[in-house]
Image (cartoon, rainbow, N blue to C red; front, side, top):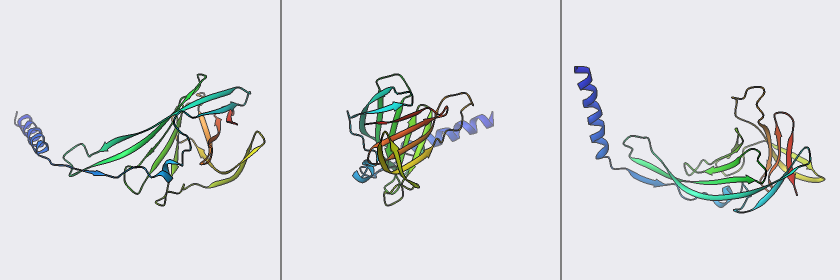
Length: 192
């Protein structure tokens, strides 16, 4: 019984102390335009990807920015207010879902990730706002050369061997998604 009362008293003290907690909101500001432009899609824009069997799939982009807050789930002296630029890509044919997000949880570090179906791809950005990846010189897609390509492998490791998933993503900041390679070697490439 003493243990129960002790636990109850601890919970009560924690609750009372958080009621009187005065937090300050630290706003890290908007996502800078040079970071936003690393994902070159505008709201309502359309683009097409061609499947390796020839089918063209059109995507419509929905892009918006929202505010979010980060705290430590207890009485924090500072609560961080940051922005998330969220993009969703809606296909005209029922294949995988695609989305991307840029966030600025602090004023120095930015996070960019893509999800394609259940696969995730992260773009690392350094403090100067430059992509921190090895650049592939060029890639040829439908007789068009694309330059300054970033090749990413999926960072999701929970697949069973038979589950179809996006394995690789080829991307540049001028056109966006250039090529997706699936785990069964099928591809989706930018169709211009």
